[in-house]
Image 1 (tube, helix red, strand yellow):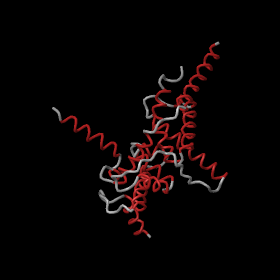
Image 2: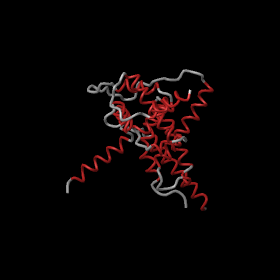
Image 3: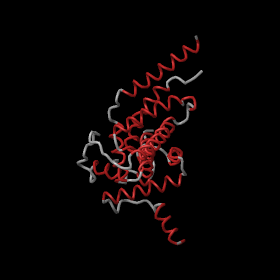
Image 4: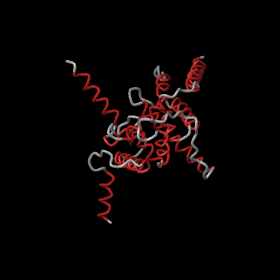
Length: 68
Length: 183
């Protein structure tokens, strides 16, 4: 009953690898993921959330104008 | 009726990966953030052309990539050189335990031609399939495969990693062998 877990881990591990050439057995593959992971986990500047709120806001007021 | 709700949140959720891809392409954190900003604005304008349920991440990566190349063409015309500036404020933690320092790895990655760099990032780090990467880059699956393979070989070369576990013949050496026969 409990081997479901390890199967899942295996599957997701393979998917993460994306490619045998860059899999867990490859130093390049590991470094590549480490390099990317560092970037992905960096703190995101507020400007992006602010920008999207602005875009959303301007869409709304445009729509309101059209409806009037 | 416009926009499905949650588009904004979905875009925001993709920002970390978009930034990582942008930094890998632009090699500079400030330029990368400008690229992401431009991408979000473009995506917002084009949101009606996005079909909910399809791969938003791939769609956004495509927009960002196109933006990067069009900016690069513009910049090339403006300044012929002066690029390759490496910003120091990206957080890099040296890997004590690993045989290759992460900083060295980053420098090596930056030496790759853009097409090889983006291919190896998309496949080896961003988690895209070859098919998705081919779509993002607007080229054939085989082209992505050979770029990844060349990128990997080049990185191994720069970093002095050799005799690493290989899995079967790589497509590039097979290609070279074939070409050699033809020549």
